[in-house]
Length: 433
Image (cartoon, rainbow, N blue to C red; front, side, top):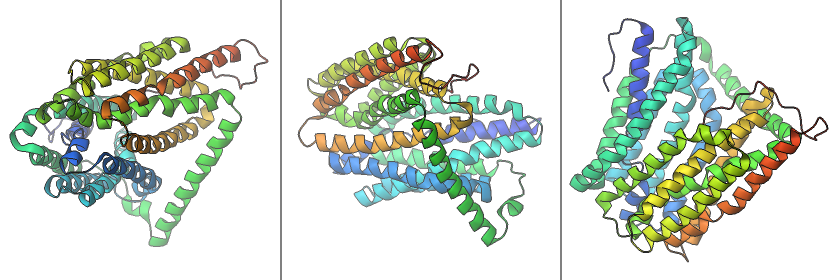
């Protein structure tokens, strides 16, 4: 991915830098192998799960002040710092493989994600707006996201030969180099915002951070009020984390499932690449799933759960590699239905509360993630990975029933004017997953 340093227009130069930065931040071959790295260092499943819990907690805690940081400090400097923190985290994993290093690395990665989350988007939009090209924002960020998707797949593919050649340290070294290069690219991003005026004096900065925190609390309060008055919205808010999180959590443990099934460690990245293809296919089918009836979505969800259970037992217990084809197929179904449910959420929200309720859904995802990690840790004490995957996959069956109920409620709500649900806005647009 060449870095465009001499471009015909500032917009073209910005686009080249943003796309390159995003691609480098996604080229992290050590990240999909995290569970395997921890297992190789002698950690048990409970310890590995506790690290994933720490990662989720870091995101929850650091997400609160990250917006204030992006508003009061140089966004370019924050992006540079974010990439350097990620490099430090991966260096700890590769050079000092131990529980304290892994924990510290996850905290650094949490800070990396929090610093990046709003800073890049805000910087890009304001730079485009300054040159009168704000209408190009969506297209640019869409291209950057597409490049990120491709480089994530490339990172997984590269991990296989690198792991066979140099082990986890070599995989970690590539990830560190990618982050350092991302920091160099971030340092070249344009920023014409008057940071000093935005930041002001120390007391003014404190006031801004305090106001940001109060606004965050107010957002949660307002969102809760919207949810209390909309029964269909409450149901969909339950579905979003129930459908979209558990399979993502299981994805973290796939390297351990593969190892338990006898897959050679240097070939486990190929298994992950297969699952990545399945998730990508599911993403492409998300639009089709969104247009289908809730009953059809529920059938896909139940079918994916059944296929996942069978594939996990086949791959993890019987040692049949073909079982991972079933896991990949199941992940495709989960991804498609997850996108459909997210679209259903956007359709159920009134315009004024859209960002509020969406943030509540994101908060719910993290809470469900914490519970799922704890559940996997507890289950690993009595079940093998294959059987635990199968048992957790079956939890999707009642979720599928709930999804079918949500579809019936939606049909009732649209059947007449006396339905006990707020009117739907005909111009609502479902957001992309």
